[in-house]
Length: 301
Image (cartoon, rainbow, N blue to C red; front, side, top):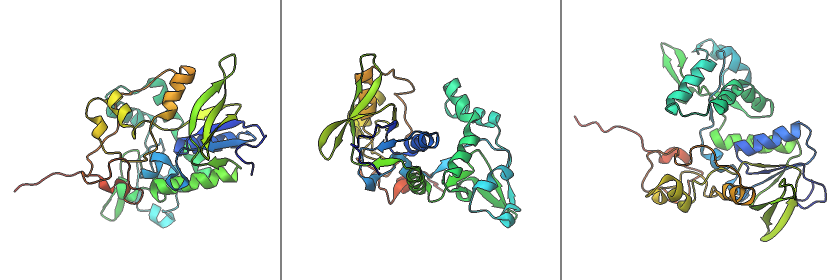
């Protein structure tokens, strides 16, 4: 394997090693990029970003059980005989997107997400992601039969932790180089404005990496109290961080500052939930993960 500062030119440099970053890196290598490098700000024992804290649930269009059985490892032919699963159509997916976003979903992005979801899931499975049917979250057992509902019938084995392990293994099979504790600092451009490199901090020294192309997949600003207050509003600096402490918006800020990247999406919104007041404030717990969630209804007789 080349060292990070090998003379071999980097064809694709990916900043961020979560589900998005590893998917991009593996796809680039699979498509013929000779040298693909993933860098991540976090140390290796924090690998995976917020992906690691998820349940690994995937929403996808499918035509029913027969469409998903070939890619899961927890339902044999006998189990399949007692499963009821209706198709989840593009129309179903679109209705759910509109409902969950109150109609504010971007039409073009939503269409791409929906139309390519099934192919994306099968591509992930082909590249070593171990999928399972989500019996615990998306099914009820009624009269001896498993009744699945909704669009998230799939999850990954061992949730987000398993998803990241599978991504790491898959990327390495393609020869993707992965470097942790290597934050990106700023983008470098040529006279035409094209991005030609990124300055990184490696072993405490700032060094320029030259690359033919760069993909920023470094997450949001959930772990940055200043940015939470700036974009989400007063009081959000006090919110507890549910996931990685390394998503501090660095790549968003240097992309805007260095190349005048255009802001898009809903910067004043977030995915929040009721959370244990005694949980860590600045990061989630990788072992306990989402068990800090508090959801329920008091019953007073």
